[in-house]
Image (cartoon, rainbow, N blue to C red; front, side, top):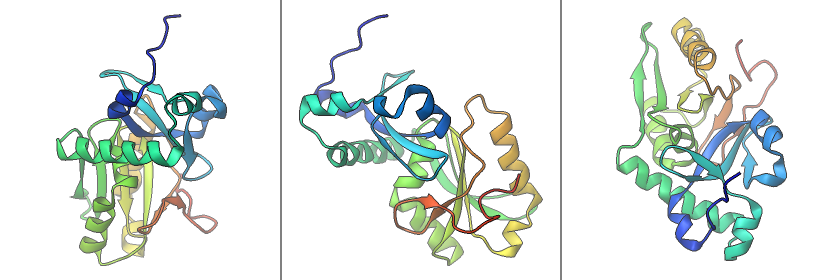
Length: 198
């Protein structure tokens, strides 16, 4: 096994939030990552972008440079905002085949984190839909859907099919479960039966 590069303050320029399924955390073990759960099965970790691959930021990496989780997350979120402004991934509103409008993020592995963490995505949803709470589904490591939970939207066969297709056809699925976006830290959507359709 090749030696990993030394983690330094300069490495922080390449640190980003990354949304992963619980199974990933279990695979690498919680002690080998720096992160936090959004829900039982959707987690965010910090990674170093290796321009084609990512590697986990480990607790000992932050210890070596005297950074806390909060310090590193602040830098990672700033890097994510810079990547979005540079067009590395897209956040927006789209109309599905059946006429239902939803929010979405796609483009690369940064997109789900961008939608969940960058406040401008939540604000664009609130402005467009005139609501303050949304469900978000990080279906795979390159795609997230966000939508109001009104009856019209929830009846959308196109939305259900899009979620199912993105989950089952992507090599790195995350989850079909719902997260709550309400302008605060994303969390598990409350209520039985509201966590997922499939």
